[in-house]
Image (cartoon, rainbow, N blue to C red; front, side, top):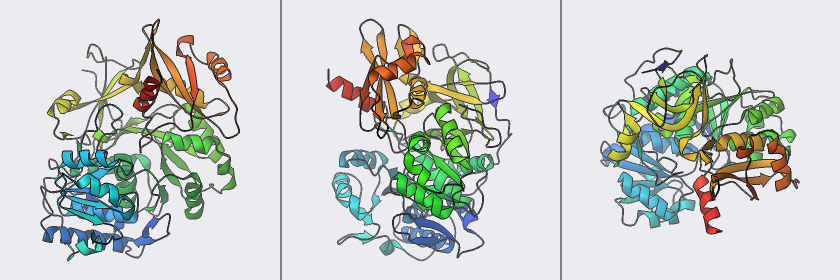
Length: 519
C-alpha cells in the first residue's frame, strides 16, 4: 500500500467540544465585537455571544433538549446562527443544518431523515418551515426575530449553563449536514465534536488566521465549508465575521472596503467575479492579502487573474462534507498553480486505480482516498453508502487526483463526471478552466451528452460577460487552439446563470435534465 503522509506530522486530539474550542477565541475581551450582521449593521460582542450560547444551552437543558435530541436550523447567515448552533452543541444535542434555498418538500425530507424535533427559522422562511414540519417529528418551531403565535429565540433562554453537557466527543453525532446532492438524494453526514475540533486546529495551522482579522462571511453556515472553516475557525481564532445572508457583489466589496478584510474564504464563482467584473475597480480592496478558494476546482488562469487584479495571494484548499471539511491546503508562502495543497496535519492519502483498486504513485492519476481524524463517522440511516465510502478508515472521495514529487495534490475531476469520448476521458473542469480564460465568458459549465458515434461529447453552457456578444463559433475556434479536438464542446448553449449549490458546486444534473427535456 502506497501512503502519502502529511509533511506536517501528527495532530493533537483534544478532549474539548467544538463550543469549548469556540470559547477559546472569545476569551480575553468580552467587549470586542466579533459578529456584524451585514444587512443591518447589528453587532454582537464576544461576551454577548458566549452569554447567549450558555443561556440557550441552559434553556435547552431545562426543557430536555440534549443528548439524543436533534435540533434543525433553517436560516441564512446571521449572528444568531452561531448562538443557536453552539447553544445546541453545548447542551449535548445534535444539529442538522438546512439549506435556506430548499423547497418545503426538500426541508421535510431532511427533517424526517434526521428525526429533528425542534426547528429554528426566521420570519421569511416560516411558511416553508410550517409546511415542511407537517408529518415529521418536529414538535415546535422557534422563530429567530419573532412571529405571532410562535416562540422566539429569547423565549428559549434559561439560566447560563456552566459546562459542556457530557457527550462522547469522538463517537456521538454533533452535526448532520447533508451532502450537496449533485447525484442522488442528499445524505446526512455524521460528524462528531472531535471531527470539527480537530479540523479547526488542522486548518488554523495551515491558514494562519489571526486574532483581530475581519472577514466577510457569505459562505452559507448550513454547509460545512461555511460552518466549520468560516464560522468556527474564524471565531475560534479570535477573528471577526461580517455575515451575509446571500452573496451580493456590491455588498461583498463594500464590507471588504469598510472592515479592511485581510483574508477571505471564497468559492470559484466569486473568484470569477473578482477577476472579471468591472465593479471591483470602484472599491478599495487593498487590504486583501490572501484568498482561499474551495468547494470546487479553481482554474489556474482564473486564480492568476484574481491575484494580479487584487495584488494578493490566491490559494486553494480541498475537502468534502465527509472530512469536516478540509484535508488539503496550499501554503500561502508556497503557492502552486492548479494545486489544492498538501495534506493537513495527521492526514494520510492514497491514489488508487478506480478500476483495479491498485495503489498508484507520484504523477499517476487515480481516485483520492483519505484517512484522518477529521473523517466522518458515516452516513445517517445509510449503512450501504457508508460501507461503500468508508473502508478500513479510508474515505473514497470519488475525485480523480494526482500528487507530485513535492507532495502537492491536484484534483483533475469528479470520477462520475468524466466524459468518455470514443474511449478518451474528458474532465469537465479542464474545459471549464479554458472557457473561463476566454474574453467575453463570465461563467460556464460543461457536461457530457449522448452521441451516436462517440458515445458522449462535451457540451458547454456559457454565461456571457456584460456587454459581450461572443458566439459559439468564436468559442470553438479559441478552444481548438488550447485543447485536443475531442475535448472541444460539440455544442455551446448560452444561458443567464449556471445552476450551483449553496457551496458553489455546479449542479450538472440540472443541466443534464435541461438537455433531456429539450430532446
